[in-house]
Image (tube, rainbow over all chains, first blue to last red; front, top):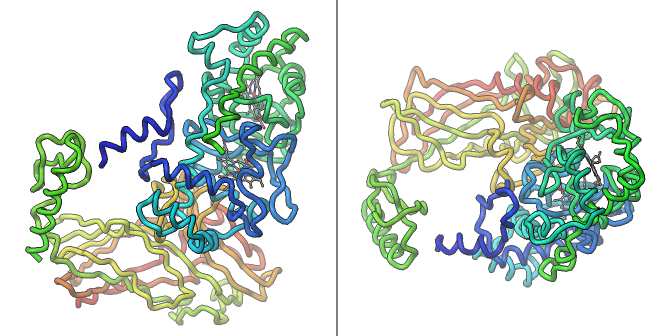
Length: 317
Length: 275
């Protein structure tokens, strides 16, 4: 029985050879295809919101790298808006913490936050469990996934985690170059060199995040305290989790509050818009002062981080 | 009891023939130790007899204030220090990690030892610790709150399920004590204290140690003994201001810590009640 488990893990979650070891290790439950399928069904089902109007996918669209494209803030139940910009769900098993402020400490708990948030899904876990239990199809899915048709909050969250764990992007053009299977053109290469010089201290390769909390100079004063809301530590004010840049052209608008609509604006920020504050990262100078051709090269490089196989993968929908 | 043990071993032995070769019991001390097993699959069965067990009930008696008045839900209580009039609608808290030391100095740990006490369901519901090995015990330890490990280990079940409204979804960690109710002294007419914090400076998890100095706790087969504790919810305000000043706490921090720890530290051992 348990021997199979190892084999299953290898085939269900493909660990890309050029990625480091994942942070999340499926220690708590036996991952199987039925659990992933169940998680997928739940992810796309508005049954998880209090008036059955909003699903996880309402704010996390596959075609946009599982972000909410074009929206600084996402629409939840009762016409309310989320407090922050939706995050593209990708390569989550490498992330030690979740959400812009890292307030969620485990992949299995990421589903609970939007469900419990009155501005997002505003639903009670007990009610979800009751509703699912009344649905014969779901009972059958739980039976297949857990060998029992008992439905618990834990199993709902495990299934969502199982599905989200499969959302791995590792086949962008950038990855092929990284693995030595392709090469950048002159302009992309120029952008890559700038990226390696100026950005990788936070957007570490190949995942494009070090998953630390940094202040990248967006504000002098902070409307949103970010990481400090969780740690209550003044030295964390204005720091946010370094986001992945995978599928970046698809996930606009950018930053925790969606303040930039285009990558041009983002690069302008790093070039000449860095604002001083007590917690500004020492990895950033006042600005990198890029020339127009350098800006263009950086964007050409960032475009290579889009993974068409990921956004079109039929297994994900 | 002995017979039960034998059938168990036979059954597992049968299973191990059909299951995969590399995994099995890798502990030489176990009766079903397998030389071929490379990886332990948790199937080990041991000789020593844990079959003879009894039950320990933890009974908490609730008092209010120094004069030792009784605490009650849905009743107006006057706080002896702040003078606030308080009526509790919710009082829930976690107790966890019970361990017992026997007269030979060996510790027994209660597995999955997590209890969510909910006083709105009654004040005299004992916490039932089943499967305690028969023996004489001289010491007990337990925790008020939920250990840091379970705060960072993903979705839990049972008493620790997120479905009890005792887990912060936006800043993960257990609400280890929740006290809510109404008070004419609060500006809003109500109060809500959600207390937690499992790490760093504002950790509230409190370990308690009880020495059964005058009388050992005796656990006999299929019988129930009890340990009585005394708790005093008025202690929440021992170092904290009137609800006219602070009627709400919703996150870990100094205020939460002061309140919770004052209550926790005061929880006292009363007596052992054998069988």
